[in-house]
Length: 338
Ligand code: AMP
Ligand code: TRP
Image (tube, rainbow, N blue to C red; front, side, top):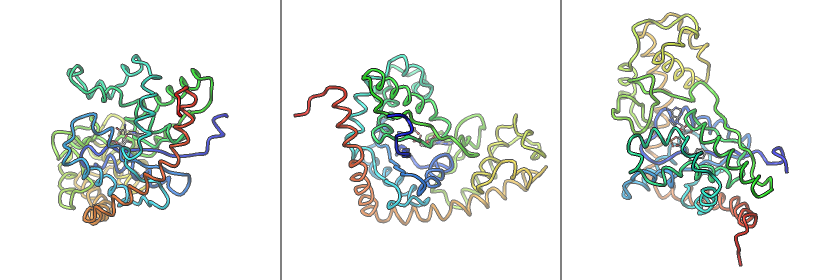
C-alpha cells in the first residue's frame, strides 16, 4: 500500500474546554465546513483531550454540546459529515495507548504546546497533558485520515502524528497507517489576541476583551473591536506595510477571513484608512457574519436531546470506520483476540 492508495479522508477536532472563539471559527470550523461535500469529513468534539486539564463534571457535557452546536450552526451538516464526541468511540483511547508505546519521550519533550501549558509547573500537570499529542495521533489515524485541517498552533502535533505513523509502519514492517498532511491555509490560521497581537486568541485568556466568543452579542462584538489594541498609524497602502504591525495585521486578516477574501484585497479596499473607519467596518462585518451563527447556536442549545441524538448517530458511523482499523492494528501488534 502506498500513500496514494488511502482514500482521501479529513479528520479534525475541537476541545470542549470553554466557549468557542473567533479563532476556532476562522482557524477551524469555517474551514472544516468548506471541505464538506468534497471529501469524506469526520469532525469530533475531543472531550478526552479536554480532561487533560481539570473540567467540572457538571459542565463538561454541556460544553461538549456547545461545541457541537457551534459546528452545526456554522454549517456542518450531519448527513454530509460525521459529527461525534470522542469518548463515545473507545477506539481513540485504545489506539492512543498503543501509540504511547510507539512515541518516544524525547519527541514529547519537544512539544511547544506542552511546554507553554505546563510552564514552570511541569511536575504538577497531568500525565494526560504530556501524552496528549499521542492521543491526537490516535484520533487521526484511527480513521486513516489523510488530511487534517487545523490552525497554525497544531502544526507540530500533526507532524508528530506523521512521525508516529512512520515509526509504527517501520517497526511492524507494514504500510498500514497513512502519512497525514496538515492543512493550514487561508488568512486566519493564527487569529491573535485583541489586546496583544503577539499572543494567540484563546478560550482561556484572562480578559474577555481579548477574544470574540462565538456566543457574543452584536453590542459586545462591536465594543471589543472598537477597543482592540492597535498602533496609531493608519492602514498601509500595501500588505507589506503590515509585516511589523501585529495588531493591524491581525485585524486585516480577520476581516479577510470573514469576507472570504485576501488581506491584499482588504488593503486595496481600505488603503490608508484610519482606525475610525476600519474598526467600525470590521465590527459590522463580524456582526453580520457571526450573529446568525450565535442565534442558531442558542436555538440548538435549547434542544440538548437533539444534539445528543446527532452525536450518538455520528458516533455509530465513526465506530463503523474505526473498528476494522483498530482490529487490524491489534493483529499487527500481536495482541491476542479470542
Ligand atoms: P482548541 O480550541 O484548542 O481545541 O482548537 C481547536 C482548533 O481551533 C484547532 O485546529 C486550533 O488550531 C484552532 N484554533 C484555536 N485557536 C485559534 C486561533 N487563535 N487562531 C486560529 N486557529 C485557532
Ligand atoms: N489538539 C487539538 C487542539 O488543541 C485538538 C485535537 C485533538 C485535534 N485531536 C485532534 C485536532 C485531531 C485535529 C485532529 O486544538
